[in-house]
Length: 115
Image 1 (tube, rainbow, N blue to C red):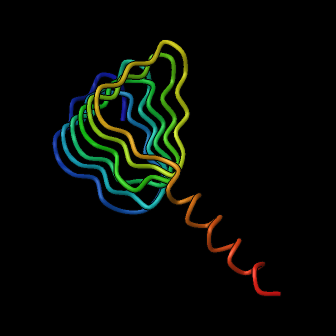
Image 2: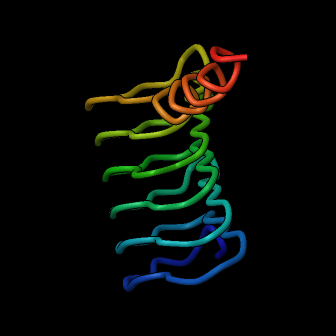
């Protein structure tokens, strides 16, 4: 999606999405979502990896990894396995991360106890 476009709707499917313009609507993909610097997304995001260098107004749910770059802005809640935040980025909302990793560590440790 180019920087000159403004689109409203919903994106659902598999594959990787790169947004360089303005999009209003939810994005639910079995893949990665990349929001370029200068881009704006208003909606909920569900994806494996979410990379934010532009502005996101909405929540990120069930991501394996979220990357908030130096130029990135998130106004919404984030639930992810891991979160990377660059200096200079901004965020307003609640964050939950690391729970997926903790669950794996606990189940892996269980297997070592009884031997």
